[in-house]
Length: 393
Ligand code: NDP
Ligand code: MG
Image 1: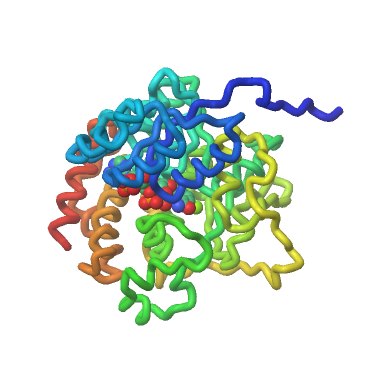
Image 2: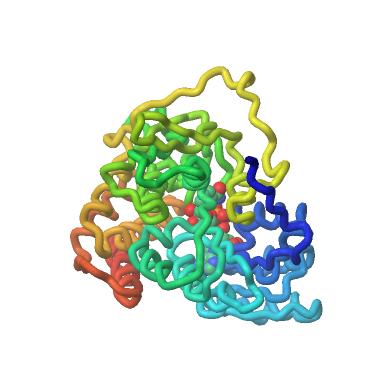
């Protein structure tokens, strides 16, 4: 018998807080909410420092509250939004609190880097539904988030396209029958470049991603394939699958978004055009499908779908996932912090492409290992690793 179709049309719209509303994921989330006002109502929007962009979004989407992480921009935010009756707040703590307000049903964590950690922790502790785009949260402190989730009503729905694909493939399946998760990677803009060419690549080259239009930091992470290492770590914590059963495969067309292999040798894959609207909509709907989230895929228009082994020689950052998962503790937190510092420097043409990997490895050597970190250890590790990495720029 067919299962009843659950619709939310007779209920109140889900009230969402978008942490990082001005970014690539944030604005696409707002697109979906605006197309479905019967389903979603943005009640809180936050940004890092871009007051003008945040104020413009608030004028259109009319949230109850706006938060700017950069406290020096608070007065500007108030001048723009208080006359509209929108409550204003500033600072990292206010942003974390906004992720867990009583009138928020779902928190979309769409800030970049380490800044996503505290809002996600607060949202988990407050039992919110979470649409998680900020993969760095699970990279930095996956074990802590896992422990917090065990004690909470909260549930995390992945936004990252690969993890959304795996989540979709796992529907109706017995988790014990999963033998392997295969995460696809586009290979980034340097997939066909020689190591010598890559070593001279500038940020302006790395920012030309062939398939995805994303924020600057994740676009550089895609070029180094650090993004894929992060996604392997993210998969470890989202799906409880160990490093020995996780792998990455390069798939330049970005049509197959990831795959699950089962114990009978069968594989399931999720396919679609490279467009984040679908995984965002799927997470917003808590794994319910929204019609027309994405334009349909025409397989007849696709000449071929190809797959190849990733090249760890040209993209050594990929090897850091295995290292982080085998060593555990605060290792991935160090890697993330050093990577953030190095990527910021690379974006300003202050270091070369392979300096990113070198800085991460040197920071790992110089940072104390903590086997079972708590939140304060992660905060301290993040700060220390940033300072160490900063001395190498
Ligand atoms: P963007 O750089 O486009 O946007 C980042 C958002 O976070 C902006 O709203 C920005 O505000 C805010 N922000 C930046 N720094 C801080 C800070 N220190 N404190 C508070 N807020 C801050 O990033 P993306 O949308 O591309 O990525 C967001 C997250 O989603 C990342 O973790 C990324 O890995 C992940 N992701 C992104 C995908 C994509 O397609 N873009 C795909 C899969 C995952 P402001 O505008 O003021 O700077
Ligand atoms: Mg991804």
